[in-house]
Image (cartoon, rainbow, N blue to C red):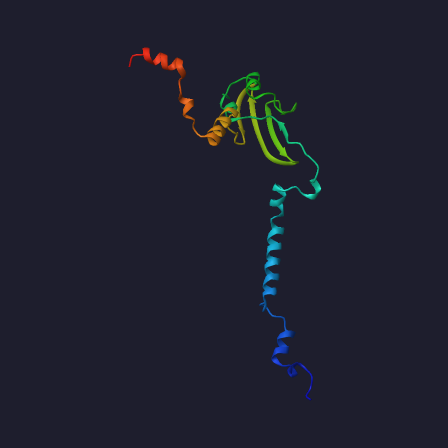
Length: 179
């Protein structure tokens, strides 16, 4: 019998004592794949939270909330330097924020929250000099609601040839028009 120690083990026993960097079996590969998948899923929790209800909101309905002044690009396009405060109020509505200390600035703020999370936040500010509109600045505004509806209808239904039909009155008037 020799000394029992590090050198007395056979090579196969040494492999079992020293942890291997590479798994030797399919079970080891499956374990690494499962850990990698779990890490990837854990990293995507915020994305999953967006699309699936979580335990804290399970069974609780949260209202969609529109807050503030909804402005569209066609409303902003009507603004002209030199307009009075009353004209601006007619075009954009009453501002959400007015300050008694800064009467020459109006802030229009819009926020949309779905299921308690802010989805959209926009600000728009108009500045007055001597009660006349001097300048305006803010976030990019969406298209008008009518334009959005028209675009959505074209995307969902495509172009309808019947929309170009003049009808029977148009057909009748075309007979008498000279070309």
